[in-house]
Image 1 (cartoon, helix red, strand yellow):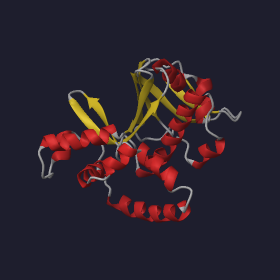
Image 2 (cartoon, one colour):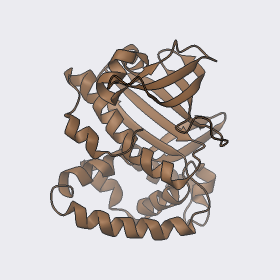
Image 3 (tube, one colour):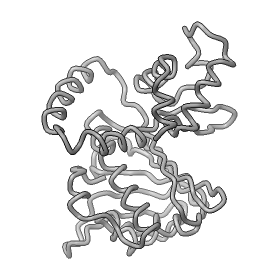
Length: 256
């Protein structure tokens, strides 16, 4: 938390975060445009943001794309805001967000990063095992997880209903899983794509979830609430053996 506050204290770093909020997934060159400083100085600011886990870097070929990571700010909100006057603040935020939506012409890519004290193969199993996903997600993710196979997001309430379907595009255990994500099967729109990147480092794992090709702001807003709940539950299950209380899961609202 100390690194987060230190990173946010600098106006240049806040400007970089604002630029990523406006358009996520920018290269260093794009972020440096119109900045009155050398690229080396901008790189140093970005390094501070990366160390604070406010920005995550995803490699695409030779490019390094920078994404805003909302996890640390979400933790600040949970600690200092949610227990005080959250309903009124949410109402004000909803008005602000609605006004901003009118000015947006594209839907950004969503990126979330978390660190889990577990082995890479344990995280992979938690992502692909139907019984484990049922414990922390409220749905069982069912597939043989082979490239080209389908997968289903099945309810565990006894109905057997399927809320999300998709295809496995890439499966490289235990480090990389790429799937399509169709929350409205049968619709004509293109499916969104979710990438799970598992990067082991000593006794912890860095899990990066990238959700792209989102069809609209409603879905972006929904997964922005849903993914943190899912991944917090996953982290709790692997580190403590127990998922978070069901009431906390229901607070997230949408089915991600």
